[in-house]
Length: 281
Image 1 (cartoon, rainbow, N blue to C red):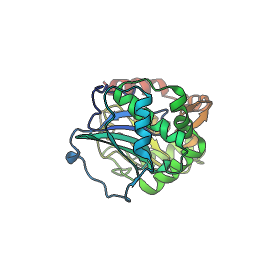
Image 2 (image 1 turned 60 degrees about the horizontal axis):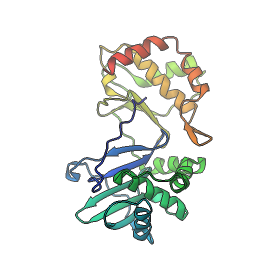
Image 3 (image 1 turned 180 degrees about the vertical axis):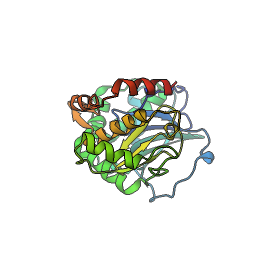
Image 4 (image 1 turned 135 degrees about the vertical axis):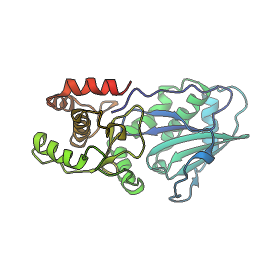
């Protein structure tokens, strides 16, 4: 359950320190700015070495020219990197621009890589990339086959991160069993469940199909939060387990009509939504 993604504007003159495009559970793309200082980040153990994209520099330079970006093309260094999902990043260090594609694209056709590069370059230099250029990447990323590969990759690479199901005030494991029996006839296989290790500002819960994990915002593990609100958020994420994200035409559907209909079976649906609206302020 997320609020609307905010897209930060970037300067046309040069790429920011780092720009990230991630294809996650929610369609179609999430765009975020990384922290300015890489030294402040917690470094994760490196899974494997990155590798150069054959002809990658020339590929990105062609896209730069095709989008009519201002100025001389910078020097590009393009790599495949073992991210935990389908991620594209671009960052500048002095006179070199580093582009990283998820190694999930290692066997992707050339038009897919060109589309990925166009998405990055167009956002950085504020150029409108033609649909014919970006469509091969978007279609590739949204395909059922690619999403299945993302889930398998995340099962291997994402480490479970939670404070466990037993909070100070609510036990999510016990709550899951009660909801499962009441609304799913006990048929829903229990994923990993826990409270987030940090408080989230704009998210109450999430389900990640890769590691098969439900996390709830630790802010709700508080005596001032009614139990019905916590139950509703957990029930919502349990519905994501039952109704996985699917493709419909050119879009990805996370909340299908079937999902929405079952969500309203929660008897305190309206009350819980109002409580969460107040909590989000």
